[in-house]
Length: 202
Length: 323
Image (cartoon, rainbow over all chains, first blue to last red; front, side, top):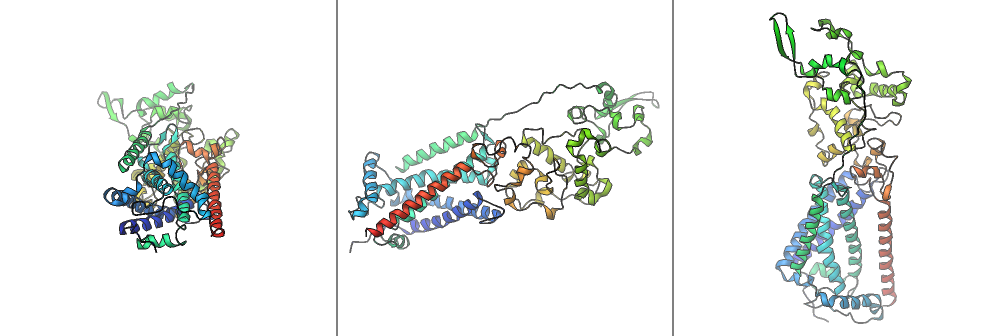
């Protein structure tokens, strides 16, 4: 039996699960507001707004915990990229997921104490956490305090533009979440990665 | 890497802030040639009533004196000549006896003309449906609670009123203009108590339940929620009691937003769904979550979600089969 690695310290696990739960609330209420209808309300509009605001603030707090945690603990090193090597690494990992995995080939980048994420995970997590989440948070706070948004940007309504940025980044993060959950089933068993995020041990 | 990402984040934030700080405004001034045939005639009245003070020769003291004009009788001549009644002589509505000064005391008892005295039953104004407006007004809380004390003039000052919603391409200006009509009573106890002994309710407190209250007040008119919609007249006049006001957010925040039948009804025909945005006429002035969803983005998002689910399902099934 391979030696277990303690991948997920307590703060990462708490951050991860609160973040995950709040994201589910945000996606549900966000979809409900976007497709709001008098005849078929998914969540009552004012309730959806309240839940969405609360979950959005919680995700923002979580995000600061994530950034500070990565700045001051060893967890931050897993989000560092070596630009020169990444393209080749991505190709290998992509080949593995599309062909190698079905031929039972060994994973090209097995996880170790120094490698928590494979290259595809690393790139997607970096884009999600350092590009789209901040974009979603900034635009979300713009919509929470619309008086700070200017009325027009190059002839386009400021709130309209902010909402488009918010919806598009939210949509990309929703797609990320689906793929993230699916890829978490690729472990020793379909549930082993999920268990790891509860116990901390991989 | 974190430092690099932090710099990237800072750069992104700066770009966002830059665009946020940019503001381009457009203004359109309508220039219309008008011939003010009664201007000279009206000036006889406006030389006193157009100012806060006026002069007259006081025979008692034997010289000209300066007096303060009753502020309720001051007419803003600039507003008057931009109003709907710009081409009126003062004496079209007021007694010819006002030409004499000092004005006779009994003129205070003058029965004032109301809208329907001129506009009712006249084919010239048929397209404005004044009869329909009158019927709606009679059903409204303004009429039923205040009887004949509440006339058209309570809201539509004959010396300054001008049609706004259907002529003004700037919806924000229409909102300010129309809401100021309501607030002229509901935010001014002196005018409010002309027809009521009650203290006027505080509009801000009464609407505390409304999320983003300031944004709503700046972007919709009071009548959007407080007047019953009626498609046969241009602007709803049946103001409802507060328990009948629109309180369901989704009535505006949805694809079939009621605002398209009220605030944006004069724009809606010209720019429906441009660039795939539902209720696109709103977009030039405002943005309503839920009402301004984009058809193309909706389709793209459904296609992407579908492809992602199909890909995940296909990959998962293949993994099970190749186990």
